[in-house]
Image (cartoon, rainbow, N blue to C red; front, top):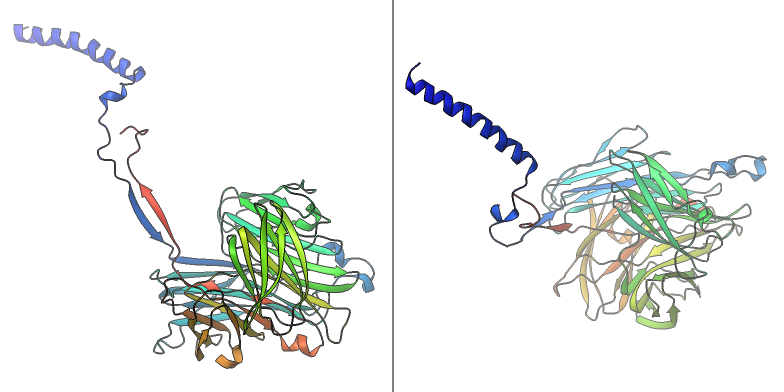
Length: 507
């Protein structure tokens, strides 16, 4: 062996053990943080992301509880001739939209019937039977005037759900709050939840009542589990009985869910009204509740996190009329009997020292069937520069527009049929502090969707509006039929995502 080969062998015999020792040391030893290169720069980058998809979920039409369907025929609860219809309308830069019955029915595509009319509007409707309905719309651009509105209307002239129920179909969120009427005997209030995700979620409930401040101890537990792609319901009236009003906070643990509440009131065998309720908007200090008419019996439901004074005023075409002041306790639901709504009054306006939630319960009695009455739960509205609502046929509607600001507001209303064809339009000015009423007949026959565009020259949206529904079959039967449809905003939904260096993360 040469001298060179012997040297290489010796070097190898020395190097291999040293490398092995170093590897073992690195496996158990963490280098000090000062040896790592620090993050370069300290700028946080903010990116605004816009939602490009609208998904809404219309629950199944209301039903009487199974336990009420047993017993002697004359005492059984019945859904009678209850019918329902779902209508969707999409506006602006839309790629695709569809309605799908979740009970296995045929999917209905929502397409633009006239690409040359300049309206960029499309609509479709279907009879969902007794199943829920899913709506999906994909936007090409997220911009003002682009979006969708989906609503469901149910009506009956026989059975225990006589009258009208209406719902602006909810979208999926992690959280939802509800302000609901009395949980007295004969009242059923069911929280209905649909989970569109692929994982189960737990809904946690907190309820405030009218008898004391703070959370109630619920008699049926404070959680419910919703399976992936499944529905579940929770009986709120059984969980918190005997309250004059309740405020409900629902929180999902794992996935956004669509939530609504069905309300049905009976007095013995006589129906006293039913409705379906969506989640509340954010609380506010200045609120408007449109959609009232003379002879309505009104009860105001209020809730706030802090004690506050609330000033109430009626609003009509001539302006405002002061009604009364209410002292509201914090963390407590309150019901205030306002009596009959005076003739000509179209809305209720509230001003509070601290932010509050507000819902107005209106009731009316049948003209021929005195044993029957109906109710509608009308939430405080929100303003948007562009918004729309649907009116499922055969329902008709009277629109109420309120301008609570100090300046006149100009707006354009356009009516569409159930395919999206333009029927007619109306430009109007709502004077400061006043309310206007407009029939959908002024926009055309068989209006199925209405879009409102506000002239927001002052930089902010100000008009609050909704649609009060009626059905000829219910009226002709001498029954009370009360329901109100709220609009959906056709405005971009955005969120800000911030990114930047994190000193706690090693490179």
